[in-house]
Length: 579
Image 1 (spheres, helix red, strand yellow):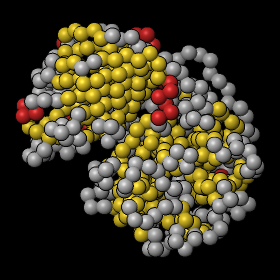
Image 2 (cartoon, rainbow, N blue to C red):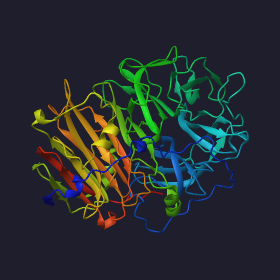
Image 3 (cartoon, one colour):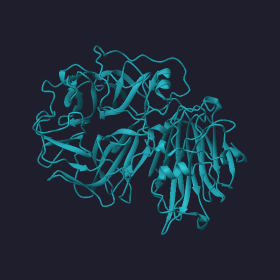
Image 4 (tube, rainbow, N blue to C red):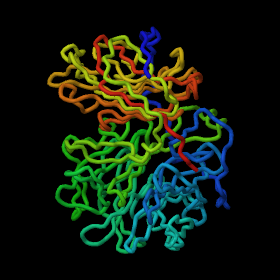
């Protein structure tokens, strides 16, 4: 059911966004944090019974305390495993162990005792991020970063105690740990040597793995090789490096098919195969697409694929420390990513938890070969309920249209826009190279020609609060430019929250293509996919009024030109069973 009304004047007031907010990251600085040691951590996670308006209903999170990086996702004997960085003692970073949950469908999750926790000299001050690899004989192995008594970062190995257990409850650490460590000879910076990837096999039969590192301001993916997965030798050169990027955290390196939108095993290489190198820095996950020479062990990004903050990102909002794995059951590559809070540290402590995981995304190479495409896993759609459909409708400039009949705080919305009259688009200034800055200057309340148009989500009844996810179309020199924004400037009356606006340029030609938008809404998270997943923006919001039944959903057009809504489908989302 849809209720039309005039666009309230509240959208006309411009909210000033300080440029400094674009420079403030709210991620966690791993290095230099205090490492308090707690033993006897193998206990069942207790549940939190207090109802909280910002806890999610279908995004992965533990019942309480701190969570950050996803670690070692894998499929083993039909069971999906997710490990994650977890503080069993508090809602702030520290005391890090590998918590562990399993699932049969990537939607509903069962918790287990922590799989890896400080117990050896090589990890006594913390068990940091790493990855899982399936060895010959269908044997899982985990490489992870440990913090030793000198607070040096070293690499360790753990394997399952019982391979017949599909839940892999118990893990045993190698007596040879650490397997890789900074030394005077290799001159590796002991404070910047972490997060080993899933390993792959080269043509010589030896295993390869890369580890994040830096030298001065040059980010590096250090390469190691091994015949037996225990004795590792550092290569003379990194797999890849780039100047002026700083430390490369949580690297990920994997092949993608240049022919079909399917996933590939991590060791696959050859004709019609490209490679992706993802590294985490400046609070974002950046990636390049290129060619991997498995003989020389060199990775070279394609021309135009940029190793810098201005290059491609998985997500242009809150999304960090991601990790992919190959799902051999469905031939997909699946992406996990950590979504940090945007609330204050004090608010996180009060609510007793911090951090969630994004909905797992299927990821593949776009047909252009120039970028990746991401889409929520198909399994999440089984939570859809009570579909609301808005048929083909023309949304005139200055119109606000409420979409009712669903739980607007817990929903999945898909809308397809058709834009005509492109000759009336505003002229694009070629100096506008930063989409986030552009979105902050031209927010949802700033009237344009073709846009802003899109969705107002997590909106209060009187629009005192809302988060706007929208498009603007500009006329460039040789093509039209589509800007996608997620504007949190009016998301909450609580001004202690980070309400940074996010933005991305969307590689869609509105002259020949329709503009699609899908947004997953889950109480304090707004996860949006533009152009069929070509650009993704995730935001955290904490409204005061727009909570639970006080939440509303609207389609809006604050441009002067009309925009067609070809289809809009929205579903209430059922609650998943998570931990």
